[in-house]
Length: 319
Picture 1 (cartoon, rainbow, N blue to C red):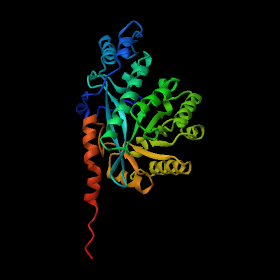
Picture 2: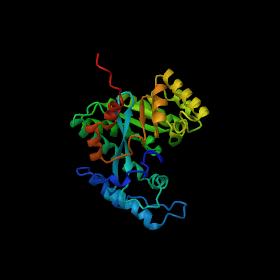
Picture 3: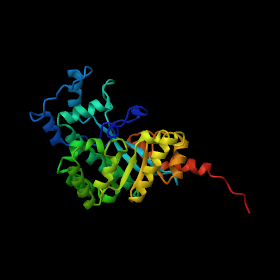
Picture 4: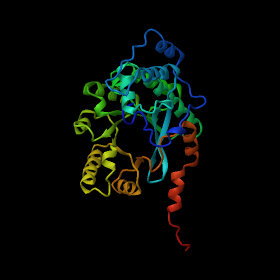
């Protein structure tokens, strides 16, 4: 989970995400830990909007398991099929003035994000197992990890156990890390290598935003894909300089054998540009915001983007 993508933006369809029936909250032992004396005292961030009741709400959300997962589809624009999903953390009861960055900072600052992050891993794998049981066995799921989780030596084992519990092949999971969330390159490399030995692919998220993006491609050779940041996607097909930069990144990634996923796609012009330049995996509001588990089940069954593509295909005259 990172400040921008690990927690889904509440821009659209935020009210559609609800606590799914059958979706477990934090394990009872973790809830007991978080509710007891070992829970660190919440610290007040240096921001005037943060009041004691807001911090108390964050603690209560962790203890009571108020967080849920939402899923945003990634589309293969060659076929219109849903290729994979990104699991995003949502807090339906979040105070209206609490920003995503502030919430993540609060979880990080108070040592709570490892507990929430562990729940995300288990819940995402559980949901993926349910998607697979419904017949979507080719589906891949990506989860985000925070900077604190990168430093957690138990993360690879947690992911491995969660996959085994759901009888999920490791190749069906992708772990997204963000350059700005990983200050220690050696730790990041250890994590990427450990996940790679398990057969799990790592994705460099928000690629191109940080100062050391290019060096990551050299220093993290085990990474399997990059996500082209939305700041590059916004001007595709309309901003000449931005399009040239994006094209250069795509060509470099291709030469290194990395898949490219475009995020923040919002217009047909962007979709066509990406397809023309060999980027066939896209996610963004042009397709769908993140939705609840139940809504995603329905979306996977109906494959609405595949149908729209078929409807646009010209009908050949009978010979």
